[in-house]
Length: 359
Image (cartoon, rainbow, N blue to C red; front, side, top):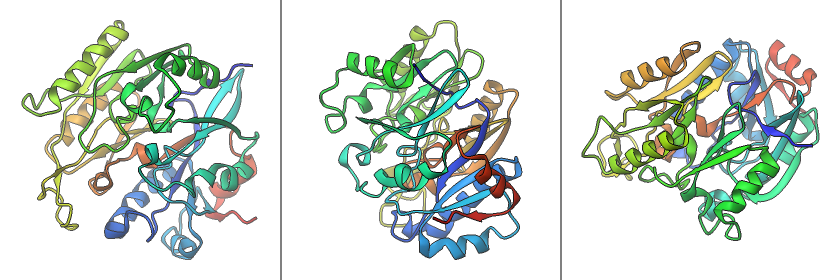
């Protein structure tokens, strides 16, 4: 039986988030980061969706207080290294209306960061909440490296997949076969170009190109910055997309230029390090699109492009200037959950009141 990875625009019942805590890399900006998370939680809960919120034990009481008066939140006590749940949270595939959670192995983005706790999250904390047993695959693949449309056409990048610390035994052709076997990909396009400076995921597709519902692709361009070092690579990526998807409409997002001081934790924009800010790192959740903005001039144009690309969605801006200080953005910290994946009694409890999962 072949299951197919579901596109992000199918009906979703929840979003998974991992609440930033003092032992994460968010420590210098912890309160600002938590405000971004609260903004996302508010939008999801107000849309009648549920948030599955991973929280370390010592923060549960504080989170409950912050969420006083909320509904739609299921607090799951858990231990984790990082909050980038897009890359270690389970994925959802489907066959004949039956949804199935799956996971790949995770090694901290090609062994750059510790991941000993992240690798346990699905099996230890989330699996008991699911309607179907979790299927695990041995390959190292991050969720942010995968984008798929409703026809089973998968997008990814060679720079990420072929990194020697992920799956050195796999060739590009091997990946095509593996994506067909595990994700039901009818076809895979693996981009050779496109990368943002200081993106330590090695070029995740969710920072570069995203499908729309009706034969379109939104991509991170740089047409507004023809002298930018990213211009040539992103233009070459756009050409690849045009060649691979000749019938698709391409929507180019403007490129922001945001610098950060490595030592100056309070003054974003004043340093010498380029941050990998991407407008392609948005989340589709039912009829909403939560769109990252950064408090810069390009925000308005980016929101306009998304409105054109997704005319039937409500585009909600979320200021993610704090998130990019750790080299990711809104899509990276979220993982959507299609309808029917979580046991209905847990969803029902969460929608009635903020609920803490107990063993």
